[in-house]
Length: 191
View 1 (cartoon, rainbow, N blue to C red):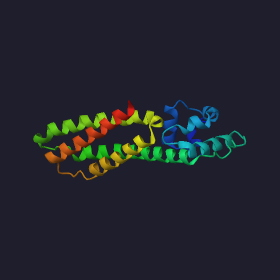
View 2 (cartoon, one colour):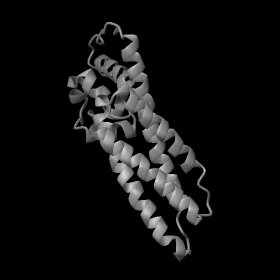
View 3 (cartoon, helix red, strand yellow):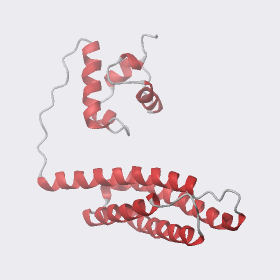
View 4 (cartoon, rainbow, N blue to C red):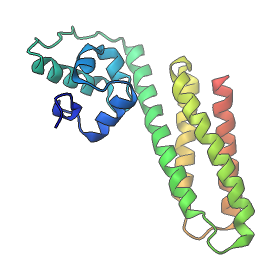
């Protein structure tokens, strides 16, 4: 093992090391110099693990861990944070459900469904790009819009979860319409 192998730091495995490398952090020194807030912005690390990782790095440098005063959060901010967290979870689940539905709706050997499947794939791709765009503007959304998106995502997730292995014309049409409506909602929210 190399001296600057990030997996030597507690709470960092191969997957987190890859994320950190993609983020431009390749050495323990760079990790030590990275601010806690910047580290917390990395997708699967978050505030909790960022603090644990920073403390572990500080210990390896024989420094006292950063002491942060507990942040006082108002009820409104807490509510907004909870809604944004729910939205993030919904988007993650929705992406997984789209992938699963894509596998279930493949028209294996049935050419009559091929056009419907291609339409479903196009709408899914558009929705995925809008979900990625929404992830970047999430902080600028109002509470009402965020709740509306979360509720619609719930409904779409439920529908995608019930997509069976035997594709039928009405299922393709219904799923494609729901995806299109949700995609339009995200487009309007982003503009």
